Image (cartoon, rainbow, N blue to C red; front, side, top):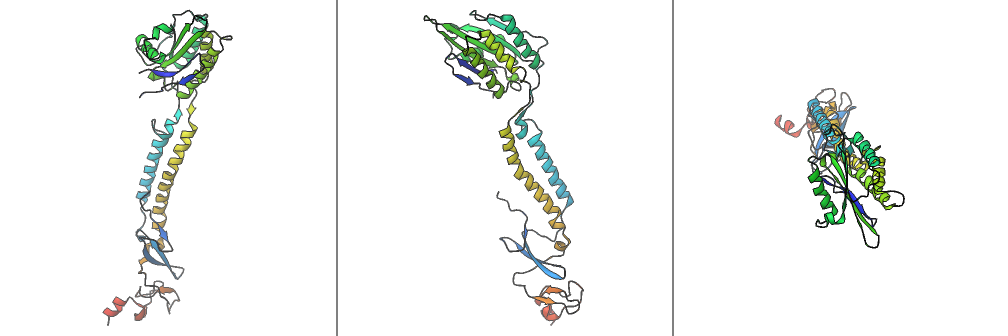
Length: 332
């Protein structure tokens, strides 16, 4: 349904339009010191034991398929956020698309109060706007008595639009005037745009037009009513089809997307890096109280007492008293 694009009055006030119708999970970690929920592991590197703590099984190798899947999820998320219309960043970028509903201009200029002095000049301005956008502009002038039974001029403009047009591709400008007994010109105006024009007459562009038209109508010594309307359209026409960016929304969306992107990246790297480490795959669960280290009498490598029956470096048999206690007891 059509909706207001903005309006104003002789008092200098104007208004904008009613545009449009209507971490709790724990991550995988490996640390050199204990943390809650971690298991103690030992592996051997450079002929010395290395103790680490992890909240996942570091002995299982990473999966390339899992990393690829994470990458696919990331690309889908990026596509939704950046490239699919109606989502996130796409909603922050408006690329106007010219309307093609009309085959030739059928511009309405209906002057019921005799305030339009140069109809041809106004028509030319409206036609240039139509040629640029495909939106059919219309201008209607009425007296105060024509809409006194309505709640507002905006309400009247809404029904005036519905009475005259059966599409959502027009932009109607309604100008109302009443000359009081003391000669004071009491005027109001209202814009009413169809829903199909929203991609072109955006909130920002409608606000710019509203401010300009209000400014020129107030300069009655310099501009006639039709001159003010024509000038407001002439200033909008060259810029109306430019792509519009909402910088604040783009920045907000990027800030919201960055932590998600980093999470996927960290998950993928951890899956490929930490879990593929050859030392991790050789690690053994090591109880907290198993700490004493011994030196192999054959190769000189350092190992953890109570963990092995053979040297983890040269495979020489470890003295029985340094072997796991349960194994030593079973051999007695």
